[in-house]
Length: 109
Image 1 (tube, rainbow, N blue to C red):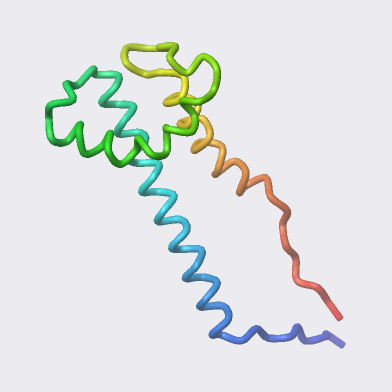
Image 2 (image 1 turned 120 degrees about the vertical axis):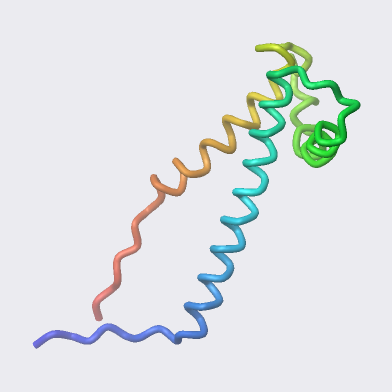
């Protein structure tokens, strides 16, 4: 009466779960670093402090491509420039993109 769904190999599930968790951890690390950068820019923390230098050093490679866009030198609020705000907006769109993605339903044979 009820058709049985084909079972997935547990090893395949573990590999895909591991990849998803690693991607989420990387996303969380990058997002935290960018938000920390925004806080430091908003507070106009001097760059001679080791923490400010470290955070800017980690996030500058991410911001660098956005500095090539027109209007990149425009300051929006305190020390926050347009590339900083753009990157923050892009990082905030990732969870929305994941929620709006297609829902996968199991196929019945």
